Structure formats: C-alpha cells, structure tokens
Length: 440
View (cartoon, rainbow, N blue to C red):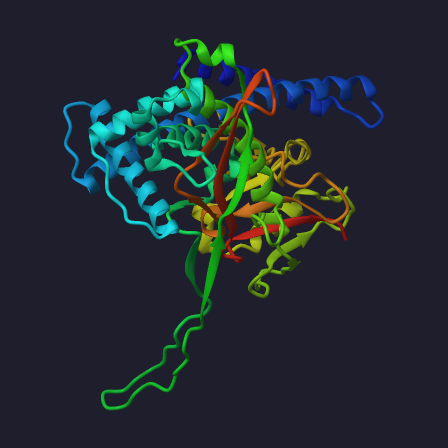
C-alpha cells in the first residue's frame, strides 16, 4: 500500500470538496461561468474519490486473499515451512477438486495427482502455452491429459484461477458488495424463509392457540458459460522472461470483469440475472410481493424533484427494514452522485460527504457509496439508485475451474487463448434492497 499516494488523494479530495462547497454557494441560475467552474471541480473531486476507492479495493482483495488462505490452511490441516509451500499444497488440492469434477462429469474414475505430478503438469502447461501441443513430448502430453477436455483444451491451474478471481474482484463493484460462493456443480440452491412461526400465550396445562406455520421456498442460481479470447504474438510467447500465467490472468480478468459488471447489474432472465432485471413495485414501507423489489418514485422523469429533492433520499431509506441497515450502502452511477452532492439536510449540511480516512468510502446520509457505471443511466422510469444490504440481496456463484484452448491458426500471426468459465448470479432476498425510480 502506497501511503503517500493515499495521503495525496485525501488531500486532493479535501481541497476539491472545499472548493465545491464554496463554488456551489456562489452558483446562481443561468450563471454559466460558475456552473462550468463547478463542473470542473466536481470532475476533479470524482477522480480523487474513484482513485482512492480503486486502491482500497486492491487492499481489500489482498486482505481477503490472506484471510481465505489462512482459513483454508486451517480447514485442510496443512502445515508448511513457508507461505509459498502452503500455497503450492493448496493449489494442488484445488487442482484435484477440479479433476474430480471433470471425471464426474464424464463418468470416469478419478485418481489424485501428488506434488510431483502437479509440478510436472504446470511445467508441461507452460510449454503448451508457449509452443503449442504439437511441440510437446509424449510424456508432456500424457501429463497434460489429466486436465484435458474432449476438444483438446486444458484446464487452467488453480493458481491462474486465483489470480483472475483477485483481479476481477478489484474491478467489479458487485463482487465487492454481494455474496460470492464457489461451487463444484452446475447450480447453487438455498432456502427462502418467507414467514415466521406464530406465538401465543400458553397456560400451565393449556397449549397456546396460535398455530401459524412459516412458509418455506427454495431458490436456485444456475451457472452459465462465458468466454474471452486474449491474443499474443508468438514472439511474446517465445520470450522466456515473460510470465505467461500473469499475462494471461491479467487479460482474462479484464475481459471477464467488464462482462460481469454489466451482467450482475442488468442481466436478463435465462442468463445471469442482474439486480435491476427483476420487477419492482411501489413500496410505502410495508413491503411488496416476494419476487419483486420495492421502489420509491421521484415524481419527475429522469431526475429528482426541484423542490425538496433530499426528501426522496429519506423516503427511500425509510422503506428498508431496520435489520438490514447496519450493512446497507448505496449503489449508483457517477451522474446520480453528482446530483445528490448538491443536496442539503434541514441543518444546511450536504448529504454527500467524501472520506478523509483510508479504508472508508464516500457516504450519503452516513451510508457508504459504491459506484457502478453499469447501473441504469438516468431516464424516465430508470432504477438508477439502489439502497440496502447487497450481501443479503444478491448471490454470485462461481463454478470452480477455467478452461483454456490455445489457437495458433485462426488469427495469425497471433496466438489466441480461448478461455471459458462458468458463473451465475441472482437475487435471493427481495426485501434487502430498495430502488429509487426516476419517474412519476
């Protein structure tokens, strides 16, 4: 972590926010010069806020990786002389899980590979990526066959999978705030608790009269194939100094992150189901039918009302049950933050506040803000602002393992690495998040 960079961004935020407040107070209707000055200040303020959030996301990813590593070592009972050795042993265990899943899918028997076998696989795989299958020795082909699929592709080692997941986490707002679960099947299932058991008074010799039975349902999130095709020149691959695993993970992570960012927010029925793809209904605070999210309308197409716009923020917060408030946050895009930044409460305080502490995000009404430019753009009826506990509301599912097929033929002089993974997402708790609907 570069504390100098963090401190510089905090200083930039502080100066920009003070300039914003001063300039906003000067702004009058039809004052084009001041409005232009304010827009430039806000752009500078947004740049500092978003740069700080990006650095903090990387720090959080590294923290989570360390915690996960420690938990997995404890669960597996692994003892090693160094962190590198511990990671290698965990990679081998994860790799065997992948192979076991592949064998199960094909109806074949499974035999675990040991540490020597895993090292041989990684060495053969590196040569495969650099030189192609036709240049492998018979022993290397035999070694790689443990992870092959019917069309000649090969499973990426868990080490690369871990790199990709970490990089995707850093750039995916939904992965940072939703629940994420890795599975070895084609779907994740869970139970919906749709009601509560009744209660009533009972006497010493008499049973209570309330016999209400809670309703129970079930949800399931399916995983879907997604793919990408990063390309490299053969000259790059021939260069022994190039970290092929690192290069591939960076390219794949970038493509997958951009795709997932959009799908987790706006995905449709029959695909990865996005948060905003579900139906919504007007909510006064008493809740709406399960399967729909509640919303509050602004009363004005594509915007907040001109009079008392901050009231809509309060109204939206008021529809969420108290149980979800401790872990609640805002999810929106930059354009909406820009509008809310100008709102004040009854005491003249701005609703939006930057953070001047490392590790803490910007806030609206004291609740953290997650920026996601994949949230709907402001339009008539758009659901451009969400509030709630997204870890309770939305579940992301990752199928263990990625596959890579090396293709040196279809895009000469480039070598393509056709990479696939399986991922899914969907809402599991419809009362944990509420939306502001920008319309009447």
